Image (tube, each protein chain N blue to C red):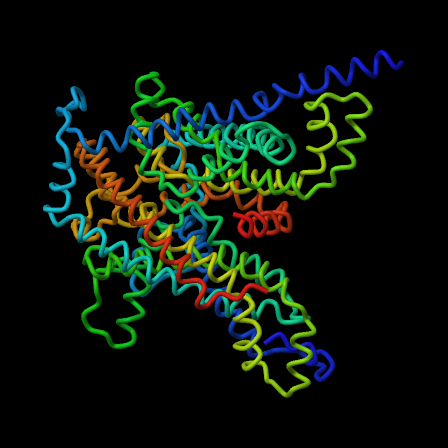
Length: 281
Length: 304
């Protein structure tokens, strides 16, 4: 496999067989996206034609326009953005503060509390969804973004990640700041937090991905089309009377676009962030 | 100055005393309200039965469990969940191969390959599943048109025949999980020292031999992590199933997963008691399977 001597042995194109396998794999991985993009500018007749017609006769961007008539798309997009931003910001703040305290402060019951927190990681979400639903219902929050945001603000996983991050930072800086008279919050926010950006990134990426694509909980707490995030809204497009494939494809492309733009803008950090969060989680 | 220093020394311990509450309090309060209390409440709900409006719960002991087990739906859902999980786990060896190829020293376009393999992980299941619904459509889907071109005369209705539907959902799950597997394994591969490979090739070991006697054994911690994560994810099967099957699919009753059964009981039939019982069963199963995997790891995971 990873044979460093190959570098010395051969000039010309290296590992032709590896490229063949990888190109095949990459095609399988990306084909659905490509196909979706093509179908989103086709007509339904073209989509359902036998033999298949992958390239439409002309580009039907009207499918995209029609999404706005069939779905309260802007509402749903807004809900998705709101819940994603709120959950991510909330988790970064709450998890980094708690993670810092668990990593660097001495207080009674510290380990007990931390282990109790980690236990949540092992509990499947179904085991608390019904009573959670009861809570947001009792508080009158069903059909509001709060119903989706609130339970998603508190993360054991994010806290664990941030604790790991703070434990890996040098302690000298902190002591210097404390000698200069900074209180613990100042030490945390001005000295330690800026050094913890890889951890913050890992928490933010996992939360953004999870929030934007989350299905089960939003499906349960929203039933009105205007209050749904896109992850649920797209479900309402299929099979009402006839299935309008072209419009569904256009809506799907638009629902995924923001995540892919974000990914392209910070590819390296996303992959690194996920790799570290995965290894430590 | 000495007075101030002494004052600071006196003030310091007492002021530090309450800081942890400020730092951890908000998180713990939220966790108590949204997680600890609901977990206990769910256990209680699973022992109660309420009226059609979900009110006036009455203690019924293990009746909900008896009902769920007796109906046969739980067994079928468990079987479907396990079948799905086993297929998705096949994504791990595929990802080991892909990430080992991407990690070949000096391979061109390695970054591009990694990004392309990673794409499915970013995709919203509900959105990308729509393509799978098209491609696996029984009448005009690409898969069946291909099969017919190859001479298969009776092509299956992939999404409305129970066995085929589960297979299609599992293929979707497999596809969607590869990206995460590749990222984790790539991180694991970075930790393998290059001189091991150099020593092996000096000893005359070829690339395939090196793959099986260096790469795979040294990746076992990552592989173990992925089997845990993907098994837990497999037991949580809902998104892929819901996205591909919808509400009205005739094959749905035979294709439900455990979580779909939970959702159906709790929020479609609105029987919170049996749904809570299903949730407890999922909890015990996930905990049990994870425990078995942790016990079994000693036999095959090599820590450096």
